Amino acid sequence: MAFMAHAQIRSYAFKKHADPVLICSGLTLHAMALRLQNHSQPLDTSNLDIRSINFADAWACEPQRPALASVSDALLLVCTAAPYIIAYRSGHSVEDRGCRMMVACEAQLLTSGLCFVVKEVTRRPRPYVYHTPAPLVSSLGHNAARSFFSGHAATAFCSAAISACFSGHAGRHRHDRTTWVPLFGICAVSTSLLRVWSGMHFPTDVIAGVITGSLIGYALPEIHDDN
Image 1: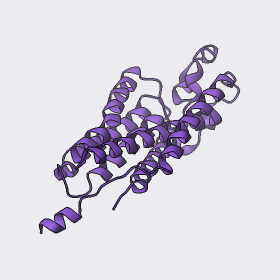
Image 2 (image 1 turned 90 degrees about the vertical axis):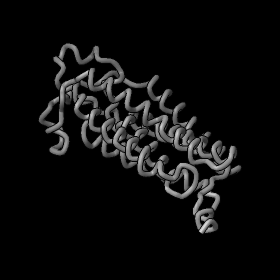
Image 3 (image 1 turned 120 degrees about the vertical axis):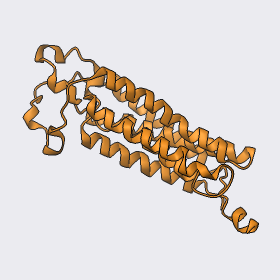
Image 4 (image 1 turned 60 degrees about the vertical axis):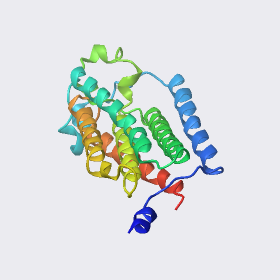
């Protein structure tokens, strides 16, 4: 039985070929997003008609609620820290813990970089823009046209997916899978819902973020799996 329990312990290893590519890719995406932002044009107000919003999003076109947005910001910090907490608790050696934390960093870097680039390319107005008086729209700033896709949802679910992978096998603190991981999952779901209720994102923005973050969050631990 002891041998079977030991065999189920999942370990991770640094990948000398993959890690530099992943880190450089994340940094490159952030640099691209910054360059696109510096060359972006003011928000186009000619098509700001609430009737032009697709059916899936029109029902959730909410005015801006800064208090709810602030709560989602706070929850995102919890979600972002989650995989590092789980990595420290679940790692069975110093090297394994370090690798797990690097996996989390790479995944979050890639997720946020990809999100920022897509935001700058699509430049979709946020829901609250449609509730802003026309003369004031031009003064909303660059962030008003960065709705697709939700970086909060992407990062939260990326972090939740990584946490689930790290705690999904027997080892130190294996009961985290039924305690801390569900709690962090609730934080991720709450963060995503609040982005809609606060008027910061449409439902399709959040869904796209959830899918993107989850895929990256599950893929990178598999790349570093040393079993």
